[in-house]
Image (cartoon, rainbow, N blue to C red):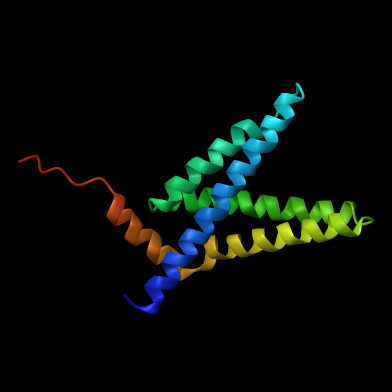
Length: 134
């Protein structure tokens, strides 16, 4: 096992972890809204993110593309919010931190060859075995 394979595994686990934690955080925020008596779409988005994280870990290229699109939209929205709400320093720092994480995950999802190689390895590892119908 070379350094390339190890780096790909680390990248995969980090990205899956970020997506999984994002889903859990979304569920918690949605539950907080539900306790207040307001329905939140985050109760639906959280399980979706968790399912995409599991699907990505199993080597799905479709999950990689969907998450890439979601993180790109999220990055644009966060930068737009920073541009609109720039009077509070703590909010700006928090939003820029989120934008940095979105940028890093987006870069790994879209451009990292090591990440895609690890996805291909996981797809082969967790894929359905072929059935001989002779």
